[in-house]
Length: 129
Image 1 (spheres, rainbow, N blue to C red):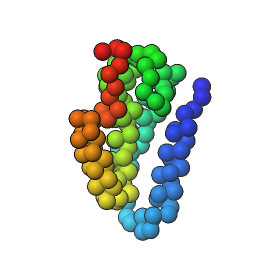
Image 2: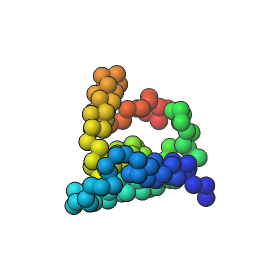
Image 3: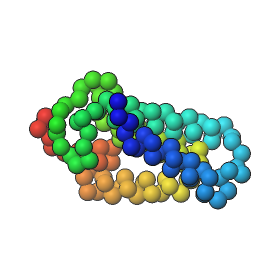
């Protein structure tokens, strides 16, 4: 089985953030910070699992190759978005990068203005509708 590139890149980026953002290593690991790390890890595994279950149907541009209705896709409309969102939330809390909430909020508001939805920003009228 081929491992998706983001499955390798995300942990490296998180490690680099932890090592090179000033003051992060000196901060104590409080219960909130540990909880954020656990949430980030859960989001990461949700993201990787969803990507693996998507298999050959994955594409960067919106293309309808095959409708996936098993695994996480039978319960969550787009588990990759959910996994990435949960992972972002956990990383923001665990690394004390609260200013990123402003960025996430800005992107969400902009997508809501343009597309009418923040939860599913790349909703496309597909051939399955």
